[in-house]
Image (cartoon, rainbow, N blue to C red; front, side):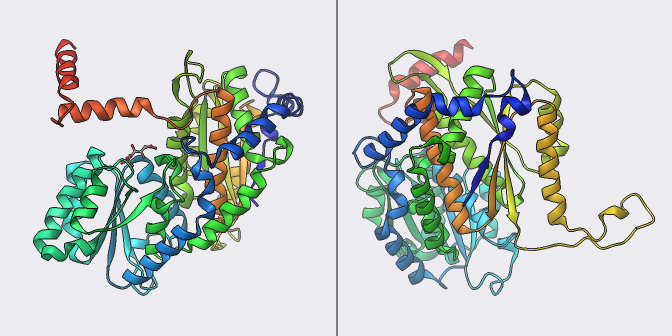
Length: 462
Ligand code: PA5
């Protein structure tokens, strides 16, 4: 299993001002945590609680349909093009980057075992979109358009552009090159899918975008490029079982949630840095940043009080960012908690040849890059602790589907528990909706005329 080492966030290591008396705090919060975990598990099946993501590891039906479709289209496409943004893209990017062979799109078809290349368009930069469309043969591309609401302007504008080209190239048959993932009943994409005859998968009810990676939102693209989705699901299930334990001493999601919450509210550490020591996990930090920020950054608590709270997530990558951010983390404001992810065993062992013995780099010869990256992870956490900077280490035995399932699910539960500790609604995002609505107004969407007028006045007065 994935484990959590929290010793470097204890006051014994990083001092009274910056650390916690963890055993005492675990005792103080024992009942609160027991109640939170029991309550989440009790509410998870109830409609309107937005906790259906806790059941995704057990969704045999989705697994079956996804695998059936992936098998049916295998060999028909050279590329998968995923259109989506935010929660509809970040999980897909994080998991494919972690689990596919590095530089996947540059490998030959044989090296990819006959599976297609995969591209994500999660922004609306006209140059990037044009650049990608210039190199993709859309006739040989399966377009997976993903939007829960079915109306997100970024995703739907990309889709409108792609659909037009596809239709010009393939006529009415273009619809076999499109697969939609969206709400079961509502939304514009659902309506279009039915009208145009697209194959469609469902973003289940009560699963928010940032908690949707293990629904068809993620599982479909994963299966299309040959990732073993059963292995991922096994990881989720084992972690779910472990995290059902209501005893904080046994529950790593509860421990990390409480450590983050207390370091923020008692010690002023309101920045959470996510720093995996593995390039393959680089985009897990992006996914975590959205999960943590959008879930916990709120202006009201559950009782309607103004709180304006939320820890700020920061993405980093070890060892790369040792040469970029660590100077700040060691010597700048002591307002952060650093999360390291340390990988036990890499797929490859890369030896450094014993050359240049006559120089100052001779000591590297005969060692492995594996030893080097983990030595850097270990030294960085010790150095941070020397500077009294609290940090935790998540130990991941290997980067594979099983542990990715565990890792991401652990962060989801950690986020839900943290939301309860902050006493906020973890699952809404009114601050995102506001900007989305203004965009609709600016772009002339019907029904948004009043906002458009108000917006124009505001913009004119700036
Ligand atoms: O987590 C969320 O809810 C958001 O990040 C959404 O995923 C994002 O705004 C995209 O929304 P949609 O899937 O409706 O296009």
